[in-house]
Length: 165
Image (tube, rainbow, N blue to C red; front, side):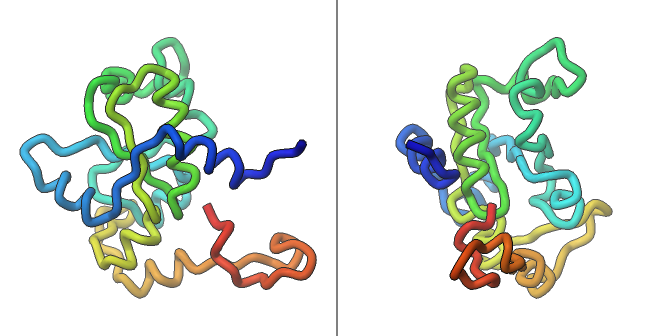
């Protein structure tokens, strides 16, 4: 039987802790804040992200988590015991990434439920590549899905956000 993207996310969710944006906001204000790992693509990250987060696109995550690769990110490799919260656009890619990291020996990794879309909805701060604050309205526009009819599939609305990652 063929599996869909949502099947992989659902199966991984059984093993991954999720936190809401307001939980992450509290954790970031603590004496030992978690590492925020943004697994979106670089262009998405540059447009807007959580200040001081680290960008490792989902496509190179495994090699960034280990020594010996051009993608190796030493801070990430050395954070197997540190609390890490993985974020993406909607909370789907981050679940897959967090589960993969658990399989790779990361002991305290979680995913942010609702992703950066939810972070923005809660009106928490996002910054661009230059470190300047991004207005909430700009985030609203950025996180609004713009599927073409072909991307939506037969008989589906092309403005839906349900499958956006």
